[in-house]
Image (cartoon, rainbow, N blue to C red; front, side, top):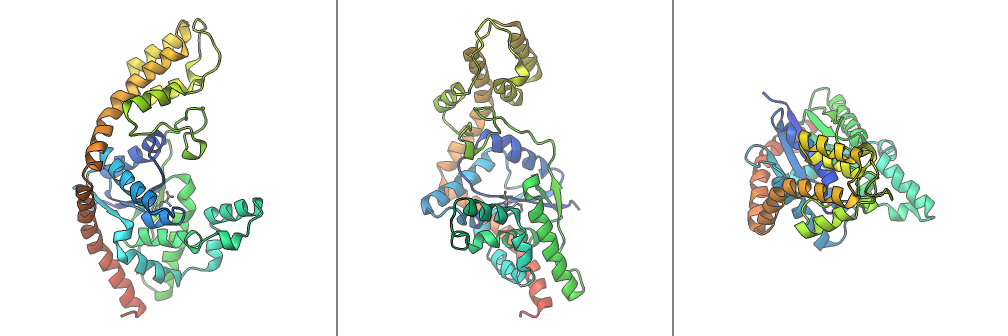
Length: 331
Ligand code: TRP
């Protein structure tokens, strides 16, 4: 039997190519190795997103985005967190086994506290309990599905360790293995994608290339990549150019070698390099964008796809929660 992997996707804003190479693509590659489950963590999104239209749109955008990028809902279980009531039932049960001190140590919470202190704001008023108990909801997401492994970036490692701690406290209390203790799989060698200004591509830096932008917008965005003032004639260094770093993600080996040569020979201006980058980016993104547009044009079908995943997920969830309730004496 294959091991179970679980990937939670927080709906945060418009997907960009940094998300694609840094998260979506590596996560989808796990489908062959694991019995994989993917879900949209919309209740985690609610902690920061209070505009209903924004939360609804972002949740669908991200779901459609993963489907367009190749997630096969026939092969894996794909659902929305908010459609699984057992997640919240388990959250409440896990809260009873989680010390406040453990939550005080969470990096995400500590960062939020520090930001408020820096801004001279009242931390206790600014930070909601959703953020404070975030790791418990996340532990419930994971533990409910008997997940063996949770593939995450380094930034989420502490959350998985907290899920381990919480599951272990439950098991220790009852003297038996009630809940499976998950293992983090830290995804190394994941591409760090440079943004338009050369820093890591990130929504918060405003330097992203959106994944589903129409062709014209994509072209305009690529034209905005910052470059130095080297003239057309001057030889250029491909390795220090974010145009070339991005090109490597989209071009085949021959194309990469040939563009690197043109950099080194001189005679090619930045404008031309950007056109060549646009050509390969657009070639790769066009089919994904077309699939995305089709999915978003039929929301009822998208909801049905997620509903199908929900059914499968709840069958598994009800077993875990039933076992835990029985052992805990909550009948
Ligand atoms: N906290 C994760 C993030 O910010 C999202 C997430 C929520 C998650 N629940 C999860 C990830 C469960 C893995 C497993 O990206």
